[in-house]
Amino acid sequence: MSSSAAFLNPSEAARRLGVSAKALRLYERRGLLEPVRSAAGWRAYGPGEMARAGEIVALRALGLSLAQVARVLDGATQDLGPALAAHQATLEARMRQIAGAVEQIRSLRADIARGQVPAAGDLARLLRPTGSIRVAFDLPWPWGGERFELNDVRALNYIIGPLGSGKTRLAKRLAETLPSAAFLPMERTGDGGIAARAQMNADPALKARVDETLAWLVEDGAALSDALVTLIAGLEAEAPAIFVVDMVEQGLDQATQEALIARLRRRGPGSRPLFLMTRSSAILDLAAVGPDETIILCPANHSPPTSVAPYPGAPGHEAVATCLASPDVRARTEGVISWRPQMASS
Image (cartoon, rainbow, N blue to C red):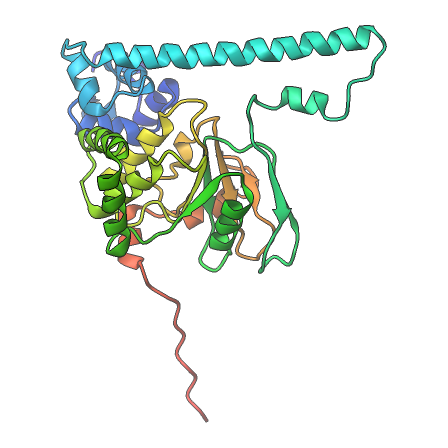
């Protein structure tokens, strides 16, 4: 390397690009990006590599799969037009939301000028994102009736906690309380898979949506499986408006989990909210959590569930991190329960 000052290590490069170091390794693994190597063999990113990575990040933000990104970088543009059209629609939707908020402010200012006090909740609704959903209910056992409130349901809401923390009970209570919500169980093979395929056979439009999503995921490195097909069939159903998914990573390998969460993050504003129960670091990458994502932690001591910010030092961050494991570790420990031998009688 000609000048070490001009090169960045993976964590510095990822921070400047607004992605995780894991994403950079994925781009490298798929042949999209080739960092230089120091004399000691460490990865480094110079101006050329950063420019190339910036293009990849921008194309991913438009919703392109890694295979589509590769084609665009090679000069093919057939995938770019539809992606730009979708991005334009997203921006226009945001413009309409902003215009609506401006009109609300204008109306409130006019009321104040006439001496009218804003009605209770007007200011709170103004500051709340347009179309946001709130939920509040008394928590079931094991919490004992404490109040749970979530003032802004985001596009992606992760539910996490150690074994026995009550996260499944919270998830089911959310599915019961949220308007037009459904709980997607963890069983995605056997009878669950048969039911999903029967549903797709009876609904050609659903099958078309599932096939399109599966093609995107496979291009992004996912492995096709009954578990994946069943999950996508559930998520692509036209109703309900909100899904609560039990252990979203169930039956999916690491590459499939990474492709899946990348796809879910690229649905854009206005997409139906998802609550994802997970203990996988591939699904919940704390370094990649975006502004339209929320982490809900169910503590081991059965304190009420709480929202946790995704940065080190934030209350609850360490507890969330200790609940997460890589897919290979999760696979090795699946079904393992604690066991303590009985003391020998004296």
